[in-house]
Amino acid sequence: MERLNLRQKRNLYIILFVTLLSVAGVSSIIPVFPQLSKALDVSRDKIGLLITVFTLPGAILAPVIGIIADRWGRKKILMLALLLFGITGTLCFFSREFEIILILRFFQGLGAACLGIVNITLIGDIFSGNQKIKAMGYNSSVLSIATALFPAVGGLLAAINWNYPFLIPVLAIFLSFLVFFYLDNPEPNEKSGFLNYFRNVIKSIFTKKAVILFLLNFATFTLLFGVIMTYLPIFLQDQFDMSSKMIGFLLSFMSVSAGLIAFQLSRISKVFSMKVLLTLGFVAYLTGFIIFPFVETLYGLLILIFVIGMGQGITIPTVFNLLTNISPLEHRGVFMSVNSTAIRAGQTVGPVFTGFLFSLWGLSWVFWTGAIVAACFILLIVIFIPSYKRF
Image (tube, rainbow, N blue to C red; front, top):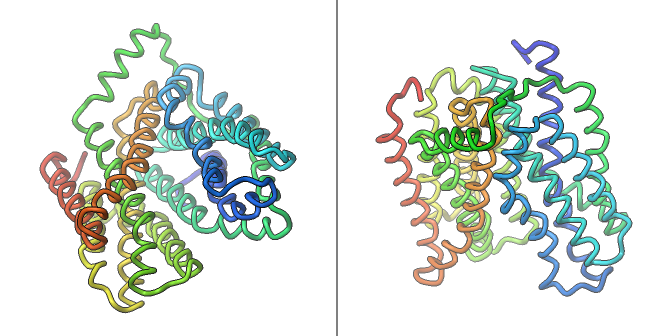
């Protein structure tokens, strides 16, 4: 990795490993659901609780996690989060009671929520300039590709037995020792009282730039989880009569496409400004959503899925990069936790919003409304982000 010294490379490898494990908590166990349902005699309508209890702590406690990371330190919270994630996740391997697994998954989800906030915070703390753009791109690339590959890894492990995918979190325990011995990061050193800290946080977060970036991430994940994750599979089955395996392949292709684009983000950012990149990302969403209802060939479908993946690979790391640019070290943990809340809100609202549209006007208008939302946010970027050279 050019221009990164040995310490920075070591820090980046640790952060990327943290990102990798944060994805494993959900992606790796999805293939287990049918086997687990039979093995533990759990009805299929309850099996989704394995995801719900895992994501719930992050949705509720994200701001608290950010405050702790700011006041107590990134390294301490990261080590404890890895141990919590690893120990509770591994204990699921040994449990044969569904209720016990749900309790363990709740605490594992609390650890995962910390990982997803602290990793981005650390990138903002350790790197700057083009190095930070490169690190954000690598992180998003790992996130996208891991999302695509972990279901396959979980499926292979589940072929041995249903509980074997729950062994993956044991890696987090080993990673916690690497963090202790090798992570070299700056820590916030604000010594003011909590009320003064809280007032400063409010001033930092409720600025035009920060609110726009939170809204952009909210919109991105509303579109991805509402239009793409929920209704693209239905479209593929209705329009092309695709099997579940083929639908899974195409969604993985989108994730890999996003990862490849994110991997090249530092090079792309040398040609285009941050504002242009955000505009291009939402133009990609707009283009894909408008054309989707009219596509009739597999080749056309692959092109549109690649375009959507390109939008994802550009927008997400770019917004993260800009957020770390405008957030001071002392408050960066809270910034990333609020951003995490915006993302989870988009993931929650997206399927509900698109489900309402589907019930009213049908499948085509799910995509076209997604295009309208993307167009609105292109206008937001053009009007409210003042400069094409600087944010």
